Image 1 (cartoon, rainbow over the protein chains, first blue to last red):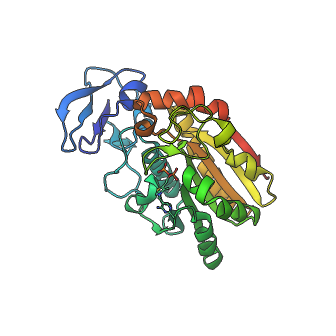
Image 2: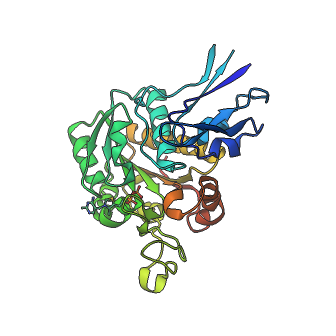
Image 3: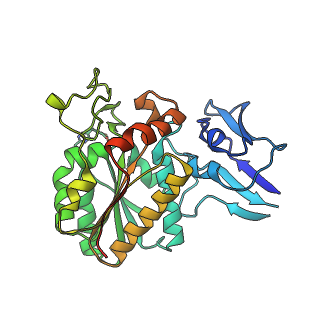
Length: 68
Length: 245
Ligand SMILES: Cc1ncc(C[n+]2csc(CCOP(=O)(O)OP(=O)(O)O)c2C)c(N)n1
């Protein structure tokens, strides 16, 4: 199983990861971080192929991807 | 747990100060990955610009020197001549390289200095609030071209790669964009290529990167990505402009 880890304090809620995820597995959550942004989150119910499109477009290097 | 992607070692833990959706962060990350993959951590030295990219020394875990606005290629020349075995690259914006630093960049290229310029073209003076840069597109609205850039009195977008391509000292010039996962992968390949030209001592190398500035373009990050692909690349075509084998 692929695990997406988003560093919520780095995230600025720009939504690029959400837009470029081919599986639509990311979304902007209700959580506000210390910088004042609503941050991106991974929907555990969705399938992730580990394509790292989210990593490539993330301007804040906030996303890490692991395989269990 | 097996890692598929983790933050590059050449990147410090510091959070980026860039605006949401800014291309500088993507480019900083790519440079860090290339430094890791080519094993250049103790060998690469960065010359930082004046502009939004200036705090790159807070992010890259390598030696970095700050230069005066536009003087990156001249400072890089000095370092390279003293430390010829090191990999020296300057990181410069379009206001930096194509306006105030025209002379330094052009003549370093013409002398075939063995340096690499990472040229971040976002079409505006980002840090000072989005004024027109030499690279601003025809008709593009900025704070100093409120009714759109009119070439009759404001000139045409400067194509740095094409201008430098006629100089005998240049060996690798490519224009790429950070506007989609595929283009971002190409950007990384271009930087690797440019660094290899420097390490092989072939000549001056430069990678021009079309980069989004959602804040000053007054767009969402996604709109800015699309604008690069749909509008900017029409006036700044992507591809290898020059490669000396
Ligand atoms: C000698 C000098 N002149 C002017 C400035 C003011 N200044 C700071 S950043 C900047 C423009 C930067 O634009 P660009 O190079 O396109 O980089 P960006 O901020 O868009 O990444 C200017 C004019 C300065 N710092 N030094």
